[in-house]
Image (cartoon, rainbow, N blue to C red; front, side):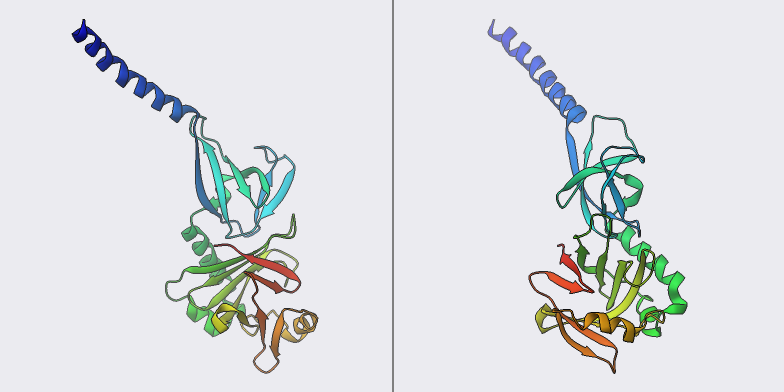
Length: 235
């Protein structure tokens, strides 16, 4: 009797284990981090449908938490969480951090004639995204500041144009990161004199230098007020 019980247990336990694993694989959710690769930002929809209402737009380069059900057939949509919003995003608008960097390189190649020699030369070698700040105050107005290891700031917004695009500036973090210095002479399309007037009323400004066309911003609690847009650092 004891032998029969042991043999039955040996047969049943593995079967139960396989059944539990199958159930978990069929109904469990997996969570992974991805990054937004669309320069225009990626809309978060109420349902997995392009015609569904948009809740907000996640900025280019922003990390986002994707939740996928391993038991459901693969689709072109993922459930996403960003800030206080939760909804659905197109998978094709997401990727890894290298995909973000590749998108920046493509953009630079198309903008070479507008950019300074310093900026173009900085992209001759390898680089990484070292710090990221995102504008989270507008539901449909995405913007991001991606600070690269080659000394270039990739600012994706509609601040300097009538469309969403990436602008490039040289930058320095000073005073152990409490100050951010941005040089506005790197893009021939940007009129520094015009924009510096706007920033004169910005309480976050530490110094404006007309000779070198630079502005030093204060960075407080992981935030920087850039042209009245509050960008928040995401780590």
